Image (cartoon, rainbow, N blue to C red; front, side, top):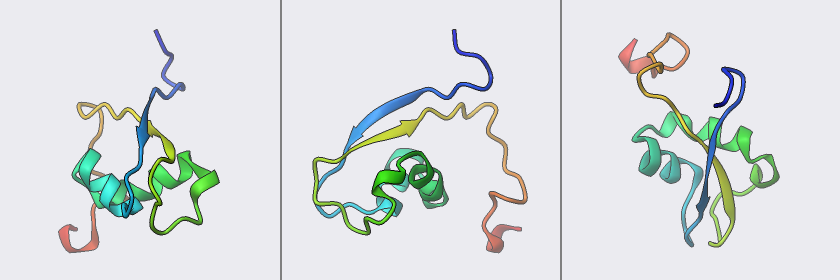
Length: 78
């Protein structure tokens, strides 16, 4: 069993034309998670539009412990 400091990941293979925002929305229904995805996959940080076939590490987020904070709420919801 992982400790609190360990992050679990799933692998995700990109499709041609996807962007960080579209992947974040598809996986988390939240475009704001794009920055988290980029931080976990720094080797692709300079990619704007994926060619397809790149394998990304997607952190598994525990929604029960994930609460909106002032840092994660978009300005229009604050």
